[in-house]
Picture 1: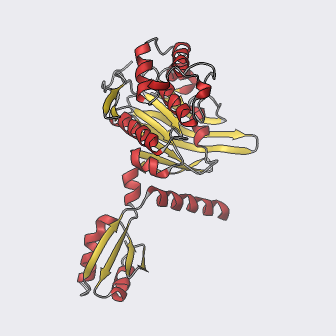
Picture 2: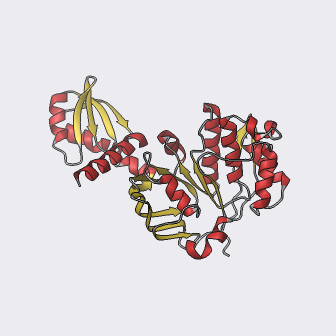
Picture 3: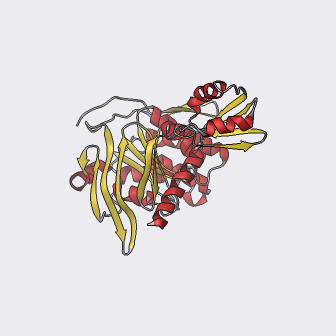
Length: 338
């Protein structure tokens, strides 16, 4: 067992008070990836949920899994957790083949998949204590209490689970996923049912987990949520990987610039002839040029060389939502063409 760095669990502010949940000892694979998937396929009868998926999830940070309904996100997580048996392909967790070390790997993983299920007549605290025991995640009551405080359930810790709202159940599910100070945490729609304040707190917690050196795999349909907290993202469609990379890199490939010039008609012709400008259109008394925002200087230079001068310019950064819609629509169109 190789020991990595020893980052502390995140400290976040709740009601202007700092909260912490202890420390973690990280053990990582020599390759730097905690999850390695190659040619993974899962077929349910005639339905192929995951087809030939190859994926790498590095250690540390927050990794987002995105995709429309039926894209294979939850199935992929289920395969990695051993809840679903693959049809073919290989998976490695912490540098070891899952087929020979799945049980050992699971002790280093925390997860909340879909809606969390607990014993309805036990309190939130009693539920966590129960799963702490049967999951061989220690017996520290202090850890349970810290987690309950962290997710905002300290004042309802002794209430029965069946009395919890949907948002409270989600919070308890996150606390459960963090039991035992796991190195790798899977969170499937963790902010489901939370009010805006609760969503903000959970997002801050997830972001701090990644910054502290932990690895969180976040599956979410809320694109702005993923954009806010994820370092890297993988976009799935029809069970296949169609895009993966650092969020900032994916979004910098095609931004846009809104501008006004001394001669917009002439400017549209000049910019339209540049091979690195995807398109130019008129909008609200000005022009919008689709190009990487960092090329704004090149755009201004190209116009001034033709005696057209910029009077107003505002770079627009492409959102993850627009990028997501673009690549999934392209993938759907290609599938129909085939």
